[in-house]
Length: 102
Length: 371
Image 1 (cartoon, rainbow over the protein chains, first blue to last red):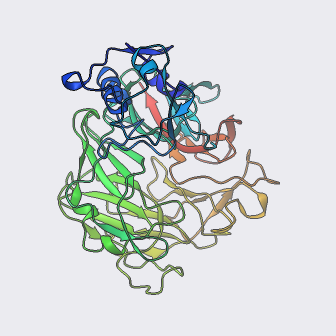
Image 2: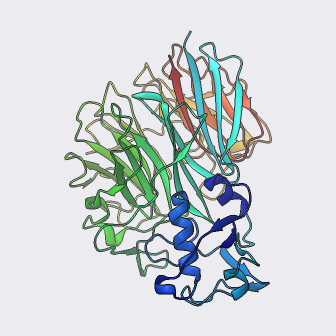
Image 3: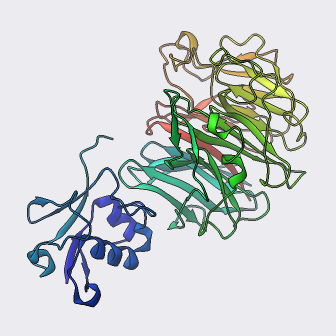
């Protein structure tokens, strides 16, 4: 089980109050990746489609960041394996809005 | 007694203001979608409890919300605003070609008779329609792919399609306006488009006879006279009496003919309202006096309406979608400011009072009359 922490605005949209727990399994038992987590998240909460990454290109929105295990994973390949502690559910995969004013 | 609901979109959320038909005491509810930019919040003419909101923000992009109960509960609907086919290029500020890039929905225009049909105007300029209550949006591509499209260039606020008028008589006729491409008309439900900018004069472009390139800020129409259109341009107030084929300036004695909104009285098709703004770089009222100007002659001859409005030290702006009228008698007029005030007049503009003073900057105002 993977724990995903959403920023407040996306929690409101998804009608959740705390971390989201996702059952994520890689295709053909492959690695658990950022893309797989986001695909699973958006399948569970379709109202989040387009809010984290572009609906067509799949690119992360410019002012969205991904953190885990005190590392900034925002610019990692979406197909890179996530840290083992995230996959094991020991550390959350954190989605947040960048410091961008407003 | 019938009631009124005023729908207000702001930089940081949506608000609803409700009153009975006397329009004396108001209830303010909100913010809905706190923290999000609500470029437009509007209701279906066919079902006043069906509301649509354009919800956007720099962090998380564009969403569309729908309410089926007058704004008590909201549901996210479709937000897939794709450019169909070849995306193409328009001119960027520096004159170089730049691919169309979706940024947000500026304006939602529900059908006059079907609550599930809504048109949406986008930045970068494109027109979309849904016929299933917002779940699926389809681009009417003939507008974006108009032969003049590669020469369209954004204004300071972006290349936004901000005005959509669905003709009340000719069901296949649609008007749109784009900053800073100009006004366009379709007579075949969006299958083809005709630039309608003849007679506009804009010092910001070199060729005054140019088919496109004029910075139209807003257009309005009275349903009883569908061929008469009133326009607030970047500078100049104009009218057309032939469905946009020709325009003539009616700025007359306005203290400034720069501005954003323009509205027409619900029962007097030659009574129109503007809010003069000092200039394109000074987005506040001349002399620090917030004055609505009314013409009862369809332009040229204007009178200032000041009773109840601040007449000193006022430096707010009124955006293009932030003025509306209701259909009660006497006609109610409403506008919101960048300072967060929403003013209303229950007597056609003779006197004004704030409904609420301290909202976030107001982006849009719509008025509904409730049964």
